[in-house]
Length: 186
Ligand SMILES: Cc1cc2nc3c(=O)[nH]c(=O)nc-3n(C[C@H](O)[C@H](O)[C@H](O)COP(=O)(O)O)c2cc1C
Image 1 (cartoon, protein in one colour):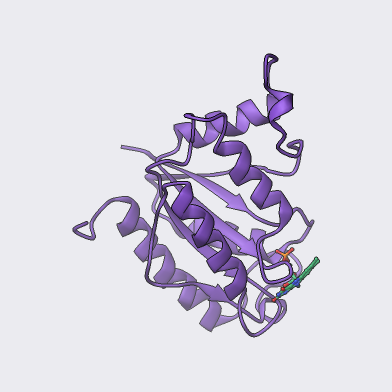
Image 2: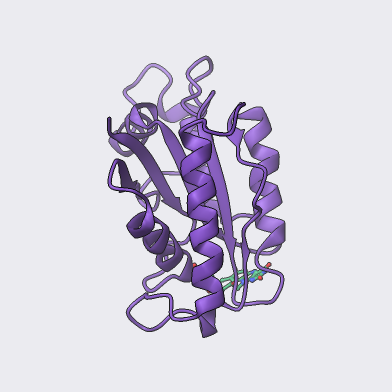
């Protein structure tokens, strides 16, 4: 059975380290995992007026449908000013509305935060965990994944070249697969 995962990278930047990490995990997941990169950069900022009594923006509908169809979600996000980038927060908000149609509810998910710094995006990781409570997502607890120093771990083509980073991502990927497949006994 194919397991469909929505892979959401928090950065819109060409050559983003978070996209490189998302690609690495996607390529190292088992074949039965269909890892689908879901773009978030073209959605208008959430505003209820855009769907009250009118059809919502098509990009919102496409995004909501993609989340609804997914069996799980993988977030890979950089830290912006100790929190998540605005584009990612917008995607969370769009997916949570209109009232009563929260597409995130009950979805199994996991979070990787990324940074060029040493702290590995801890603030973004936990800002996203805070949102996930109200979104009613089942976010994997351990292993936590704070991926730091990525400028030294990713080559210009977006390949992970640092062994410690690759090893950590391999461990994370194995745990993520088990979490999604509920092999954790929960
Ligand atoms: C607006 C902005 C705010 C940032 N704030 C943080 C921060 O709080 N913590 C951090 O570790 N890095 C911060 N950075 C640096 C990012 O780690 C770095 O730009 C990283 O490459 C972004 O991820 P990406 O490569 O996936 O786009 C910030 C970058 C930008 C553009």
